[in-house]
Amino acid sequence: MRSFMDIDRSLKELVEYLESQGYIKTEKVKNAFLDVPRDIFIKDVFPGKAYMDTPLPIGNGQTISAPHMVAIMAEELRPCSGHRVLEIGGGSGYHAAIVGRMVGPEGHVISLERFEVLVKKARNALASIGIENVTMIHGDGSEGYPEHGPYDRIYYTCAAPYVPKEVFDQLKVGGILLSVEGEPYSTQRLIRYFKVGDSQIEKEMLTLCVFVPLIGKYGHRS
Ligand code: SAH
Image 1 (cartoon, rainbow, N blue to C red):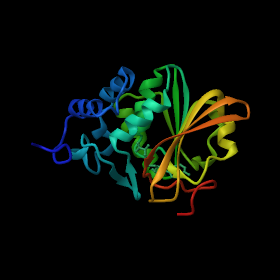
Image 2: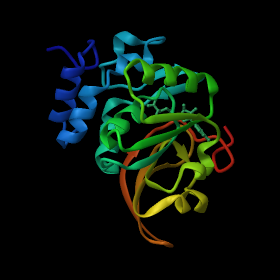
Image 3: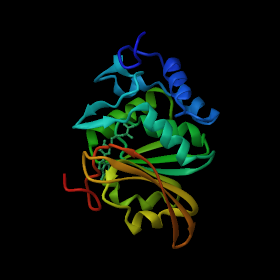
């Protein structure tokens, strides 16, 4: 039997796999996945491996997350049509594209990335598949991005030591924030916060994971 790690998979096969394993649970996430070709976001590096369920290097020592992690986060974040979303750690732009599809043309994803070269590549990839509601911004996302806030949803795709008050302040009451918390390159935790009141936050641990570190004012040193 062929293993899913050993072969190039088409997008449709990957989505079937993610559904069969319970990572994709809703039609909304499934449709977003079917609508965004992952190979476009890694075409300079490993286009042939785009439909394997694995993280891949995207340059500058960074990685595009494994599809199952993007699926888990898309399900748990619950982005809705018209939502304003902040992504901290834009990387290839792929994860932002999935969320961009989920929030629809009335919604908007603002994505912060600290490497300018990755921002440029991500912008080209997004433009080449006609995604217009994702804005990639070069800068330190560890402080969030109040200029475009407040946000209905905020999520990290890099591991932070903690979520600072500045970032919680940019989340609307009723909003959801997904963070990755832990030390660099060790096992980290995917955590979901619900902002139930102006200064009232509920916290829920979702799963273990490994992401590249958040580097910046409220991040790790390296
Ligand atoms: N969502 C991305 C995942 C990229 S990995 C994708 O779909 O490809 C996480 C990214 O976070 C890396 O590109 C890294 O450069 C970026 N990052 C780390 N610290 C950051 C910071 N303080 N501000 C913005 N981006 C940061």
